[in-house]
Image (cartoon, rainbow, N blue to C red; front, side, top):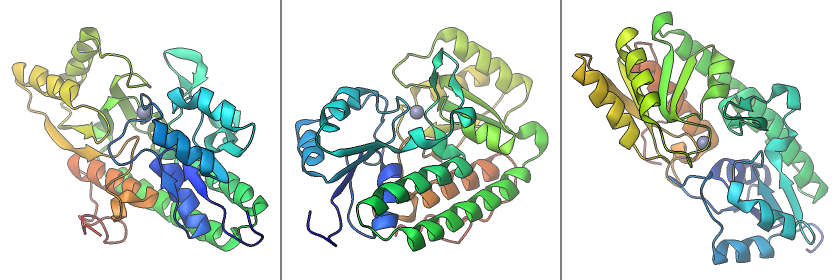
Length: 292
Ligand code: ZN
């Protein structure tokens, strides 16, 4: 790499690529696009080529991109390979309820933890000669504003309705950050099948607590969510689809929802509005659903 040149950065998930784009101001390749599920995604031949050509490889870690462990171990012998989310202090991590020794990787759902990840990326890129101080501060400020907005609109939802039911267990950090009950049909990883017992348990919850809406996820099949809705309907309780959330992947490339701030704005705005809270239709800065 020539002195002063911007390093070539390749990232795994869209959320990690978003940080690198913001901090370098340049193009960053994300291997996983909109709608892709990082838990099950296997690196392709062209992914490995892109990784082997990068100056810096940024991935999430914490066992999120489970199929990348060997590839990253190999690449780290010749390249800078950093699992950014592993910078979150151990004490702030939640455990995977199914495997006590594994962390829940979905830390981006707590903006304050995501700010820690931004700091780590800023340090790594600064070591490679990128001037990250100003863009990192700008991004941290936006993340703080997002957190304030989320607290406000989620806090407008009547307390008994603060239950988030989704396809898989991606939202535990969200629940802890904002004081919500969160329930996924599938576990932390989407690799496991949802059991009938779990569906029945959640139908009981929906009917018992009169939960008005559940949510589909852009990167997970909605089949199990449909089973919940049908189960509740069979017991005389109508549940709506409150909207599609961006859980493990961002929205379309080139749109506001295709950024970390935009995906989170979309999620909290959609959740608040579907469950009886007050939130502006176009979100925290009037940019939702603009298509650009
Ligand atoms: Zn997930």
